[in-house]
Length: 331
Image 1 (tube, rainbow, N blue to C red):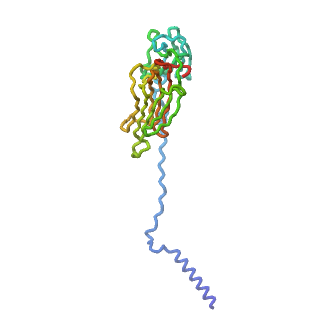
Image 2: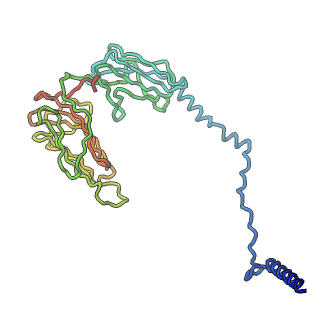
Image 3: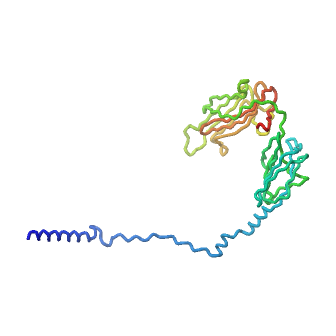
C-alpha cells in the first residue's frame, strides 16, 4: 500500500512539472509574445537592358571615333635644323625620332647635313618626338615651350607645327669652350647642425685650404607646433670667407661672371612662405674666392627628416680664370 502511494505521488509530481513547463513565462502576457522576424529585404534586381540600351553602351560616338582615326592618320612632314649656341650649323648631328601611330611607334635615325638641316617626311601619326645629339656637344633642355635639343610635336592636334625647307624648326646643341683642368668634388651628403653651427666644405681637398665654404642652417622642425601645421621655419646660409657668391640661374652657363657677388647666399623658408614653402630646395651658385679663383657648385638642401645637404662642386685652380666648362663626355 505504501509503495503504491509513493508511485502515485511521483507520477503527480511529474505531471505537475510537465504542466508548468507548458505555460507562458511569468510576467509575460501572451499578447506580448515576440513577433516573428520578417524576412530580410532583398534588393530588387535591375531590369535587363533593352537591345537599344545595349547598343548605346557598346556603340562608340561616331564623331569621336572619326576624329581619333583622323589624328593617327595625320601626315607628318617635319623639317629641322641643328645649330650651336652661337647660331652656327652643326653638321652630322645624330637625329632620332619616334612616331605615335597605328604602326606601333615607328622609329628612325638620320644625320644632319653640312648646313645642319634634316627632314623627316612620308609618315603618318598623331605625334613625333625628335632628339638631336653629337659627340662633344651638350644637349640643352627645352624651357618655357622652347625646343632645345628635343621636343614632341603633336601633328594630330588642332594646331599642328608648321615647318618647311625655308623655315625649319631649330634644335640647339651647346659646343663647349676651352676645357681646362677642374677640381671636381663629386656629389656627397653632409649632415648639418640645426642650430646654426658652421659646417665647412673644402672645394680643393688636400690643396689650398682657402678654397672652402661655410654652411649654417637653422631648422625648427623638431620644435613643438600644432599638429595641423606641417610647415616650420628653416634657413640655410652659404659663405665663402673673404670671397663672394652669386646664384647661377642658367644651368648651361659655364663661365663665372666678373661681378655681382654677395657676401652670402641665403635659402630662407619661413612658415609664411605659402604656397612656395618646401622641405627641400635646389640651387646652383658661382663662387669667387679671395685669391680670385672661381668655382661653381650645386646644392640641394633636405630640411626634413634626416636633415642634410647634397653638395657637388667644380673649381678652376688657375687664378683669374672664370672658365668652369667640362668635357660633355665626362659629365
